[in-house]
Length: 374
Image 1: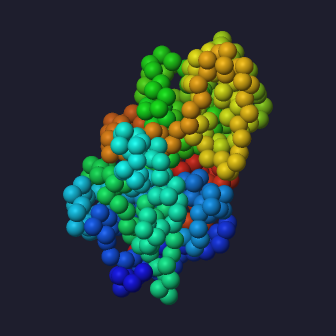
Image 2: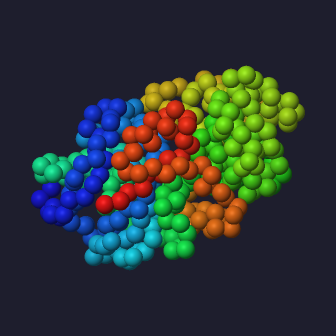
Image 3: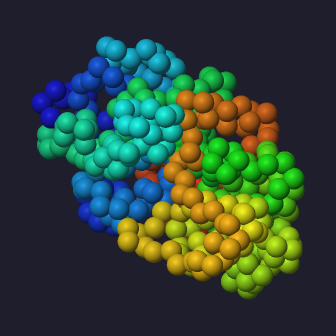
């Protein structure tokens, strides 16, 4: 990268499989015509960051991760009209904008999603970041790489939000919270009076529970193995909770509903849990799959159960959201007190980023947010 800004800034770099995150002084290059430089206030930490750190997904290293950034616009490229310096923004996934899915208004189903979000480079092979020695760093993670004081994003994945909302809290709306809430509101379209079960009560599953409350669902079940998460699920609106270490969730759900739930959401990435999520459906029920699994993981289901009961299994990425519309909608719900996702959050300083990762993986923290300061 020859067009390097001479001013260094702090970022967390992964240089080997499994980490750790190393805070280094790095540099960014000049903005392209359609790019936006964002000064990061805070960034959520998501399971997908861990998946990339550990190369469960084959993401190239060394790399700057982070894909739930929130901050203020510092500068914009020559052709950017969507935002201006000083705007408050949330960063989300980057769609190509040109494939059939994008053109049909379904950017979360972008045919080029992996190339734009996991390749570690721009589509032309260039990088936006380099280390102190001038060596290119893999970046562009979800079009942002926001574990740093600055992020270079594209106009397409920068979402303007209202300035009176607490900016340091909003980053997770760009991925994890959007995924759970969007699965309920956009993809499954859970109706008032219906029944819903979230398999996994982490950030995604609990966001789905809160969204189910917004829809007016009357039976809302949360399944997990961590008692504190199940207790929190109750406070967020779950009508029933199941500790799957001690009870068979399919049997309990059938006991609650008679025939099964209208909708289920698999949030863990585990094939055995996904099977249970399908089995727990009533006839004509719909199961959404959002959990990230190791490539090659297979889901085994009883074909006759699916066929004879006319069940539907569908994959969901990023809540099937159009982020320019959906993220401001979630902000409005939060500001109205109807979507209290702040109850999932614990803040960490930038130098505590490895602690945040460890706490998240052990289940002690549901949604870490890393405060980024110079």
